[in-house]
Length: 163
Image (cartoon, rainbow, N blue to C red; front, side, top):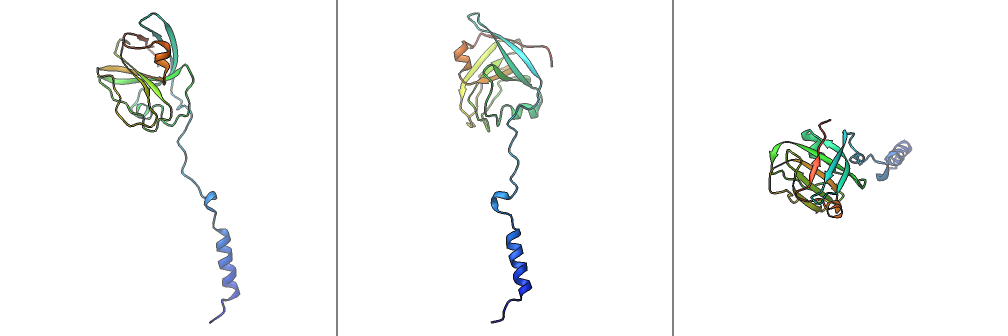
């Protein structure tokens, strides 16, 4: 058996010590948990019983913005939401992929009349959610919000003409 040269021993030891521990290895970046920097609008809502409500909503207008929606968010302020401006009237389908909080989905036609509501959509559930009738806008708010405030079919969304 031949002895290992001393220089080779030091080289092996140096390489073993220089290797980063698994905890120090770079990890893929986590998805952004903060709002996307989308414009916000105040959506006025009038229920069928006459209650008047307001929601500060981020506006998702592009395909990318609508696809991302509220994914990866860990919380949503009590009177906040996201308003999806859809590219036409259709029975739009939504899912909760990568969505970490329960949501209510309020579907409204081109005039802002609520035509359907999906309540308490479960986080991370990829089941299809839709109103069953054509809509142009979808307002997502915290799960349970619609029941708490009496928002259902027949309510109206006061949709801003901006951004």
